[in-house]
Image (cartoon, rainbow, N blue to C red; front, top):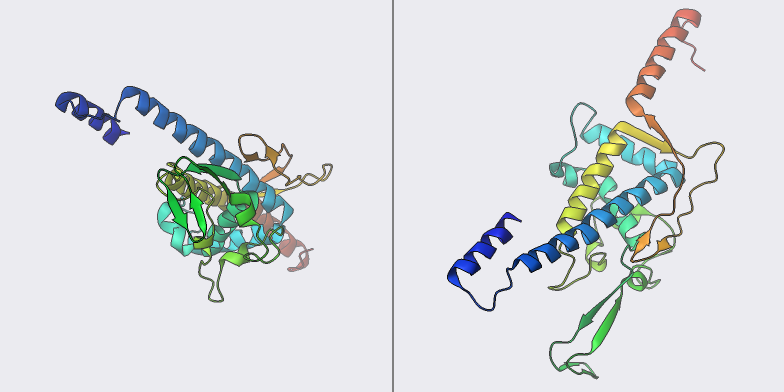
Length: 250
């Protein structure tokens, strides 16, 4: 934003034409950042927590990786990305599985020939991102939530280049970097501190997206437990049981 504001002043002072750095354009950039950055990021976190509820074994693996790499004495940071491949894979799988923006459009700026197809200038092309992310020829069991599809045999990230959750080309989502970093950091922090489960008197969350301007999570209920409190209670109960019956813990 600072750079954009600087360019507004620079273009006004130097009277540069054509001038794309205007107050109106700046306002639209902020709208794009909010709509394509903050709103989908919040929805992504809702889906991440939902899938942790639906797949407690995946949540357990994330907890173990975060505890081993970060521990609980400091906050997660963007520098932890490469050290947490499984947690990253979970975030990638949510982006693939849900595909928050299922379809986007582009227009041909000039006459184009692609193999046997002639595309006249001005033609509108629709990119079916949801179909791409659920293509059976690319993804094994595409309707299944499986973060392991983004990990190779050595546990390193893979297959990121065949997924386009933020679009592609010069008109790719301007908030992609912000969305990826903030989603990963917030999700890691939440799992570092808390565990999530379905209330005993509620049905499991429905992972079918609610369709609007994009795919969003339907409302659901969950129980949030403080992991530090649970650990402290476990240790306290263990000590009490040792005093009472020489170490037997039920």
